[in-house]
Image (cartoon, rainbow, N blue to C red; front, side, top):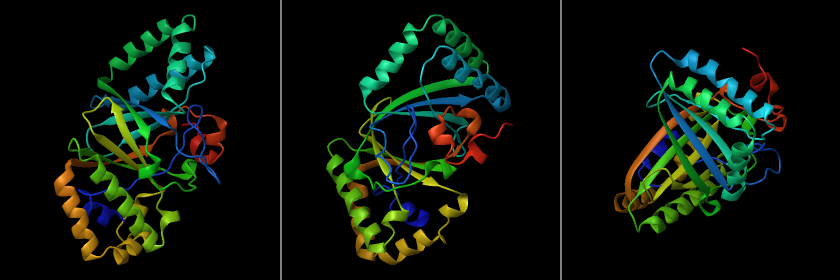
Length: 279
C-alpha cells in the first residue's frame, strides 16, 4: 500500500485505528473507537544522548505512581526526520485531559519532583513540543486491530489550504471506497485526527499501525490488492484534489518503545513478551 499512498501522498489519507490505555486503552476484538482526544508531547534528543535520555525517562512513571496519579502514554522513537521521541496519551475529552493536569498540580510534592525531572531531561533534549488532536471518525476506517502486537506507526501529516477541508474529507471518503473495492477494509484500518492546537492549521494526522517494516513494502498483500483497485481515473481524481487543497504532506515512521512507555496491564498483557521485557 505504501507506493499508492506515495502516489496519493498529495491526495488523501491512510491511517490507523488505535486505542491507548488509562488514559491509553487496549485495542482488542470488538475494539472501542480510538480516543476522542490525543495529547502528543515531542522531545528532540541531542546527538549521542539517547541512552542517557532513556535513563532519565525511567523516573517519570515512578513519580506519577508514588503520587497515585493515573496517567499513561505510548512512547515512540521517530526513525525518520529529526531524532525525536513522542509520548502519546489518549483521552475521552479535553475535560478528562484537564482533570489529569489538575490532579498533577494538586498532588503534594509532585510539582517539585517533575521540575527536577524536567531539569534532568533538559541535559539531553534541545526542544519540546505539544499538540492536541481530535478524532475524526468520518474520515477514518475503524476496525479491530491489536495495537499491543504492532511495532510501528506510519503517520502522514496533511496541511490543508484554509477553506479546502471539504476537499480533504471527500478524498478520505473516496479512498475508503477504493479500500472496500480492493477487499482489504479489515486489513487497512486507519484513524484520522484533526490537530486543534500546537501546529498551523488546518492540519490532519493519519495514523497507520504496522507489525513490521515488511508490511510497508509495495509487495505486501494489501499493497498488491490496492494496486489492482487503483485505476488511472481514480489516481487522476486524487491528483486534482491534491493540487487544489494541499499545502504539504509529510510521512514519518515511529517505532514503539517499551522503555519509553507507561501503559497499564490491560495494554501490555496483549503482548507481554515485548512490553514487559526488562532491559
